[in-house]
Length: 256
Image (tube, rainbow, N blue to C red; front, side):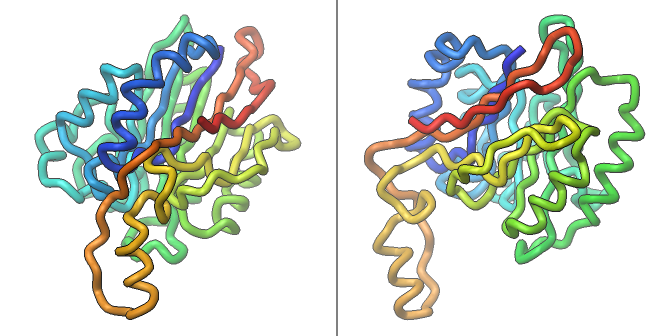
């Protein structure tokens, strides 16, 4: 079995790239299951119902979120859809699915979305303790487990990788929009990569308009971020699983 994780979709440019390329990638790479991070898909902040449906129609099986989960009020119209996950360590009083379990080729695939606490400016519970609770809760209910850790700090992501080594099939980082070259299978069998990158405008500052971004840095004045336009790239990672042992046997980055 092969599972594809696609990096943060940024704006209309990123959505169009997924719509035009994802099905080709699925066919070419023999992908069985697709996880997409969509928290920046609506002009860099949040997701709309139309975009959500477009991503599912393009081949996504599960869409994860992050610090911009509530960026568009439209999300409350479909917040309970089983294909949409919000960070599991958000306050328990907030709506949304903390994890999902999906059937695919006779396997039960669990996907968990977590958000980091270092330099994220989001009030959230401890992701290390929350993932412990979830893994205990779904014990015996899933054959494969994948974790999208939406976090800023490299150290927090690396620590989570070692913390979950041997307990999940893969943990992949999102949020920084820069694909890292540290994909590996850790000592106890968990695939790890610090960040799978971004799907959106190639000529940009992590997906945002260059001029607006530079103005913020040079003047320190508030400047509304807006998604860049132009040629798009698609970043992601493919995790290959042995169907008999349910062990991760390979991990490869994708950068188009």
